[in-house]
Image 1: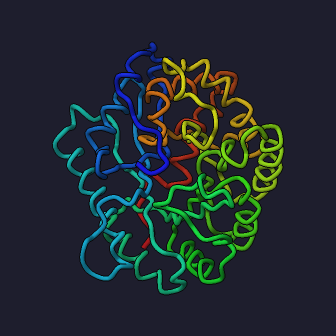
Image 2: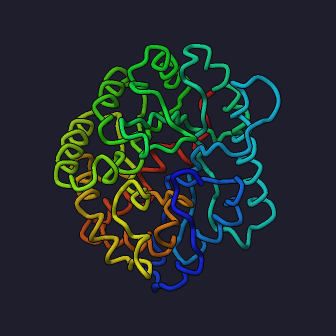
Length: 345
C-alpha cells in the first residue's frame, strides 16, 4: 500500500454514529478505485461506503493508477483507467438502480504525462472519447520534498515539476479542451502552484486535500510554523479566481493527526475539532463557492469510516448559511467539474 495507512475493518467497527442530516445532498468531490495486491476497492466497496447513511447523490472519480491498458503506446495506457471507470459507472447505472442512489463517477479526472508538452493533446482526446461525457480533467502528481519519506514512492515527482517548461506546455493543452487541472502536492510547493495558476488564468485549478498538510518527518514538532507557512500560501492562491480547493484528505499519515494510533476510531466531534483550523482557513480565504468536501476514500479509510467523515464535515459547516452549505456539499463540485453538463466538443 505504499505510504498509505492500512484499512482495518474490525477497528473501524468499534465506533458507529447516527447519521447527521441524512437528507443533505452530497457530491463526493474526490474518491478512488484501487486494484492492487492486498487492496481491492472498486465500485462495490465504494458504493457500500457511500450508501452508509449519507445522501451521496454523485461522485467525482480521481486517478489512482488503476486498470491501465497493458498494451499499446505507453502514453496511452492511462486511458485504460478512464475506460474501466466508465464501464463500472455504466454497470451500476444499468443493473443496480435500486441499490445505488449515487451517480457513480459522474465526473472523472485521469492521468496523462504532461511532460509530453503539446503532444499530450492526443492522450487528452483519447481520454475524452473514452470518458463518454464524464471526463473532466487531469491530475499529474507533483509531490516532492527533501524528506523523501513523506512521498509515496509510487507517485514521487522530480523537484520543481510545476515549474518545468515541458510540463507547462502540457498544462496549456487543458483549457482549450475544457479540462481542469487537479493539484496534489505538499504545502512547501504551494508557491510553485501559485506561479502555475498565474500563468494559466483560463485553467480551472483544484487544490487537493487542503493543500498538502505535512506534519511528520522533517515537519514533526513544527506544527505552528507549518500552519502559518501553509496559511500564507493558501491565502495567496485564494486571490486567483481560477483556483478552488478540496476540503478533506486529512486522514493520511503525513497529516500528523495520528487518528490511526488510538485504540478506537475518533468520533466526528474529534475529527471536526482537529480539522477546524485548516478547513475554516480555506473557507475564509476561498469562500464556500470555491471549496468542496471530499472523502478521499479509500485512502482516508485508514483513519475513520465514511459515515464519521461526513458527520465531521457537517459539524464543521453547522454555522454556515444554507447557500454556503449547499456550495460546500454539492454546489461547488458540481460547478467546477461541470457535472450533468455535456462535454465540450
